[in-house]
Image (cartoon, rainbow, N blue to C red):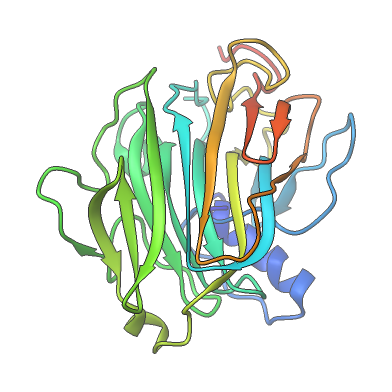
Length: 277
């Protein structure tokens, strides 16, 4: 989930909600950043976005609670329509690894976010949280290694790619199509974050609180229950004694839903309230 103050809170809003759910103190709102959806049961056939600090967030997510030192997914890189008449709206898909109380996170995925990237095309992003404190997209301690694959770069639409996060010698490494992109040093957490207890793969739409439901699309704009919709597949765990087994939910299934669920895959997406004008 990503949050921005007054719409700078996509994931921040989620963080505050996570704080409420986990009993942790809430953090002040900051720029909208990515993060996993809160641990709440999704409504069926109704709108139930997570709203906070002027932003609302809708999710379709697959989650597993387990102890792991990494995970990977393959997913379609889509080109969702993001409402150009609204501030701070975005649409993304990502993989997130979190500790038990959801205050420390490492994330990788693609996002269509004009506020961050200056256009309406999908871009690679990385993000992290440290003890409930948000950071910034594609930086804030991230150590770049690849000269070819750079967070913030545009990604080709209509293709699929593998996104992976793995703990290697105490650092959280990001991989794209099995190539090393860079890493978040374990020292950012003072060595305290050495395994994840919650792994989530998801689609997210950030909406202006005055624009719910939004016309911003998730995935390729098709409902996840429809043929040809966006997908997440090939879910794999590293350093876990459990087999991959995703539980899939949607916060507002009238506008964004899922279909064809297996323990390692699901389809997702939706048109929101309909065509943007």
